[in-house]
Image (cartoon, rainbow, N blue to C red; front, side):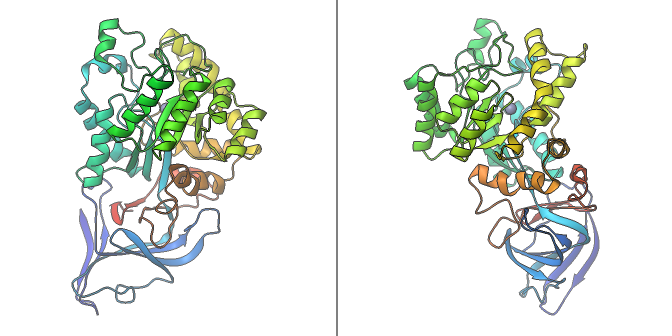
Length: 447
Ligand SMILES: [Zn+2]
């Protein structure tokens, strides 16, 4: 870390640091009082950005937004306060990004199936620490993890970040995915049966009682929300199509037991029968949604449910399907070729139909840190850059049930702030190169 200017003894006798740090700094720069001088400030995505504003941050929360560029004394620095001023007066400043669909403890690679029997939960947690850091540095200050191979790994990583032992985004985690035996979230397909026993997956359930219990076990283990696989999926090693896997009574059992414990439920779903069955059972959001139809759109709107389109996952698996050298197994390859190219059109139809969209990438399928590639895909699907940014901020927070703390730069919320040197409202790919990252008032990356 190189400190550019270190000035002691202002009017309030506070210690003021105007700092530039290397992008790879380890601990982050925290202070009692932080002031961000924003050349342009998109405080509330959906509303127009403001010019020349100061964001005043105390104890990790937004305290106030003032016109012009205020100094420490004007911001109310007290005797002995550590003050950091971030000069972003030539930058575009906005809320930290929220990715509503990641698998942060692993990343697909040719050895992933072998790693399943080589890596312990501790190994996945440590790998996740690296991916978490990469994700935060890309400007994603909050992620929703929707299914970890080792449940202990994601909960340990979430706790390590909360304690400050690990640098990463805020994590909201589902733990294990709820799946039928042999279904998309049952990670034992294609392994020897005795190996499958070792890989025993806590979220597998069949029938009403078993599914209620599976949900309650995730909640007991620490799940913030429940993720279920309503239909088959691309990367499970089973030629089981892409259609519905849970029956209606099982879906209702999952929704009711999760909602009774104040947990939202999100459903992975490609085939339209599974999408619509999950929506009829009262699911709060749908992941992927590949084959959604006009009835799905009606149900989304009736329920106020979110769609997380994960177009980047579609693009990624379509590329693998076309590459004869890629590591996909035959059932995976066939499904990837079928699903991948359809996801952009699905997002287009859903948006045109008025479905609420929350940003999500399925990172872990694609590379962690490339999350912002989804923005250009959403714009290709017909969203304006502002709508795409809204999906990753205001809508992302609402989808998490965290609108009071996340998604905008407003008094009382967490000081999760990013900045870029261009205008993402003109060219949304500016967000693929984020120059400043603050989470909870601590700066982890500065220009
Ligand atoms: Zn996923």
